[in-house]
Length: 254
Image (cartoon, rainbow, N blue to C red; front, side, top):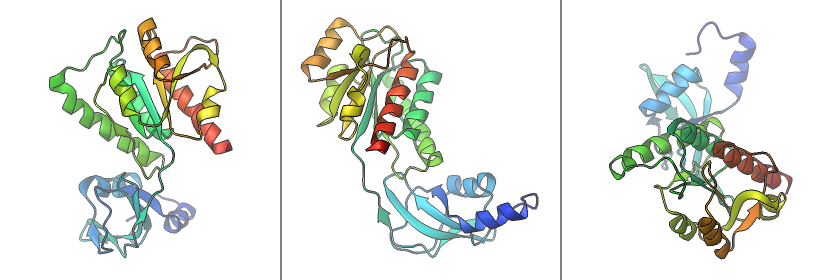
């Protein structure tokens, strides 16, 4: 139930607008379904939705469906589930960024998910200070995935970005498929991101010390174009997110 301290106008608005709720799996059969624990907590404690409120279910795979929230003996159910809709994926936006300190890296994941990244590849660059030990890799990937999924939900994205295990530069280049690789650096063309934003694109961002000469050659030999964000010296996380924001703006203008 909606708490008593919610004002009447807000109550009416809440009853009209479907709210997005991430579930573990969007039901394909249209049957009534109890919400999983995380989704139930979200609708009760965060959204504070009342019985009968419309909700849009999504599971991060691109599947969405409309339903109505119903409380049954204190348990949140999705009822009258409509036909499932599959989201049409947009051209890929890959962020291949060198690993940085944990709190800053997790912030990059969160904001990259909000800004439309479809895939995030942590780079083991030559000058990377941070490395992920093999025995901790699975736990790190699980945590990063949860952060990305939560950020995608918060920003209303039907598709959450995938997070790769840490990779070398060569392995990351092999993994981006037909995406145009872009090397973020000083002295490049500021408009390079605009030029390539409409197609699959992969932005490569080095660590605080930048890419080495050998890494630049590897990227250039792979056909990477060079993009610049201006003359300011940006921290690695700032450069990553500024590039993603530039791509997002370019696509919105297209």
